[in-house]
Structures are given as structure tokens and as C-alpha cells.
Image 1: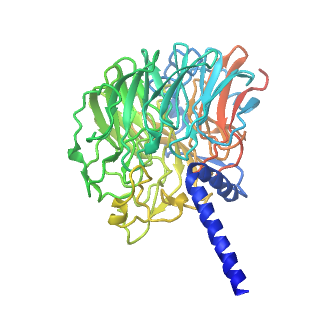
Image 2 (image 1 turned 90 degrees about the vertical axis):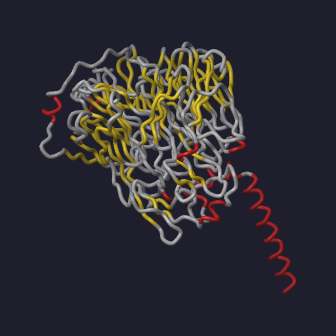
Image 3 (image 1 turned 30 degrees about the vertical axis):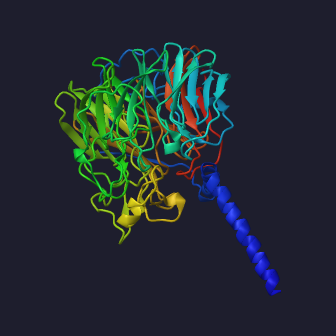
Length: 590
């Protein structure tokens, strides 16, 4: 009996070791599958969507009406991630308006049949709706949802996060990044691959999930991976016709041994703002959402991600430039122009993540609007670089408490809180900035310094002290102890006018229109249409899984349409387990 027990234990030990080896060898595949099962259980008993609107004291819709301006010209398309290169996301369409928005209905839905982190932006150009998942690029009919073409790419991702933020379009070509660090170009009509260019190394945990933008014969794209030790953020311009790298710009100081992939943009950056400990590499500053460009000046606005290790400042003294900043470059040459440092010292993983919006306000000021992960909306005067305001737009807690190995710290916004990959929109008719936010907090306790220093290169470098791989970026509050916000803020004064609170985080794109309606969705799969002046709910309905990607509007021969990306399922987010889909809505009598 004793011998049989020993034999059984030995077999079990060998089986466990074999299972561990198999899991380790297939880690990137294991993580999302396991996460899907965990998130399925976490999402059980999910409540129905709720939305409450609060108006600022002394404010009414009449205040907004006094500031109404004529909407800008609009061809009814949505040709870039944030509609315009300046990222204002405003549509001048008026067919769907305050009086009839309650007649909205889903007219058709396209199912990708993929379980994936679907947060792609949506584009509508030349009779095609374009979007992407980790391995696939799609072109569908913007009226019927009929598939025009679908291009699949087989490759090994650099990280286990199955995400892609979308595509760019220019001169008959569609451009996208991949999770193995390439930029690809396809023929708009056929989907035929035209070229590919590597800008990152997946063996170093680098990737390229951002939505590129394209202008003047160039495609602009950066690499992600700044949460991994030794990975440095870089920005690239590629020739749209050939894929040739026109210039490269390091967003943190380049060090000996770092690769050069193209001509380097002129930069004043050196290592003086980085006091790194123990010979550790400078790390961070990557980009993973999208970008903004001013076609008038030819300046490119690049949001710079967090420094690493994410939670430990003792290993990286100084200001850690250009992390936590919007970096402004000459789009043609890659030369440094200026930068705006938003997060002075980051130990919360508060990237300057989403693309800024460049607007001219009702007072005539040229303003840059930015919403990082730190839970604030910023306004900067573009002519003077003066910060006009910094407004909290979600819960903020323990923002000044340093993390340590001795005690845990609960902070808000959490490491997946604030504004993520979709930034502010601007309504020129009422001079309101509209921004979606995540209210979800995190608890962190960091490792001791020696253990942080000993982390292997090109592996996650958060410094979180946890053996649970799903708590790598801290322990999030329990599911449903979260919320989402849509804030409406005066673009000149920075005063909030109204705010809508949902019981699910808001990460979708926001689309205000000249019809007086603003569209957005939440992670419960609820799509909403609110009065852009007052926040009053005009319409709302659960249309599918989590809405974490594009929400856009455009015109067709059959009338105005609204499209939404639904079905985000990924490692970090407990959501309804369903396939990624795109739904198209319109008025029922059209």
C-alpha cells in the first residue's frame, strides 16, 4: 500500500511537472484561454445597464445654446481613427437628432466569429467599413454588413494580449499594425497584401497594436511593450507606397546596443532625466492607442506611455522624459518640436495613452485636449503651451501615496482606469469636451528592490509583489465595484457642465453630432444616445458584448448610420464572453 501510494504520488508529480512545462512553453496561448474562463465566472450575475445624469449647479442646456456655432463642413465619412487627423470626433450629420433618436434600431450585425480583445476603431470610407482584430483585417458593407473581404495573418504574437486598435486609410491602401511588431499595407478594394515592415521585435515582447494614422504619403506608427523590462518606445513614419522607414524617433533615451531601423529624427533627449539603478535599462514610453496630426502645421502629436518598472520609482529617479507626455514632432522629418509633460512622476501606470484632440474653442483659442489614465482632463493653450486646466473626471484616491514593500496601497484610477485608448471628443456647437472614463481602482504592494532589479530583460516589469499572474498590474477591485463616466466640460473654462454615470466602465469612442446627439457605449454592451447639451438620455439599449472600440456615425444613400464594435473579451477585463461583432444602427423608418 505504501509503495503504491509513493508510486501514485510520483506519477502525479511527473504529470504536474509535465503540465507546468507545457503551460510555460505555451504561455501566450494559455493566458487568454484561462482568463476567458476566469472572466466568465467573474461576469456571472451581471446587472442590467444603468445610467444617471447630473447637471452642474447653475448650468442648463440654455447655457450651451448661447455658444452654438455652425458645424464645420463634413463629407459624412469617418476616414481616420478619430474621424479627423486632429482627433475631434465630431460629425456634422443631423438626420439622427434629439427628436428622433428614440427610434434607433440595430439594422444588421457582422460576426467575426472570433473571441478576442475587440477594441478596434472603425473607419468608413468609399463605401466600406474597415476594422481589425489581432489576426484579421475586415472590409464590410456599411449598409448591409455584407463582407467585402477579410485578410487573415498567421503569426506568433509578442505578448498574450489579443488586441488591435484599428486601421488607417490613404490613397487606396489600408494600413495596420500586428502583435509581432509589423506594419502591413493592403489594397483597399481587394485586401491583397502590398507590403510589410517590421518596426519592433516580438522576441523582446514588443508589438504594434496601435491604430496608425496616414497623411501626405506617410503612415505613422509606434511600438508597444513599455511595461516590459528593456523595451523602449519609438515612433516611426513609413512611406505609404513602399513601407520604407522614413524616420525613427526614440521616446525615451536611446542607449548603446539599441537598434536603429531608419534615419533618426533630431532629438535633444539624453539620459539626464533617468537615474536608473543597478545598471538596469531605461524602459517605457511606448505607444499603444493612436496619434494626432495638425495638417496645417505638419506637426505630429504622440502620446507617450508609462516608465518602467511601473510601480517602483526608486529604480528610475528623475522626470523620466518623455514618458507621461505628449511629444510633438515634425511629421515629415521626425525632428523634435516640443513636449507637454502631463504626469510629472508616474508610479501608478498612468500612461498618457489616448490621442489628444486639437480644437479651436468658442473664445478662439487653439487648445490641445488630453485625457490620460490619471483620471483628469487637461487643456493646453497651443500658442503659449500654458496649461489652462486639469479637471478630475473620475474618482481619484491616494494619488500622492508612494508604493512600498511594507504595505498595500489602494488607489484610483487603477492601473486599468481613467481614459484608456479612446480620448476626448469636441462638440463645436456647444463648446463642450466629451470624454469617457473608467472608475475601477487597484491595490498594489511592490517587491523589494533587489527582486525588482533581478527581473529578466523583456519580461513584465511592474514590480507588483504577487505570485498570481493575473495580478501583474495590481489587484483590481471586485467586479461590479466599478463605474463609467461621460463628462461634458466647457472647453474654455474647464468647468464640467453635465456628467453621466454608468454602472459599467466607458472605454468606447465618443461621437457627438450636429443633430445634438452624442453616442457612446460601455463595457456592459450598452449603447447610448444622449442630448449633447444636457446629457438627457434619448435612447439606450444593450446591443451585444462589451463596447470597447469604435462608435462612429456616417452617411449612406439609405440615411445616417451609427456603427459600434462589440464583444471585447480579454485578459484584463471581466466581460460577457461572446464573439467580436460590428453592429450598424439607423432610424426604423429609413
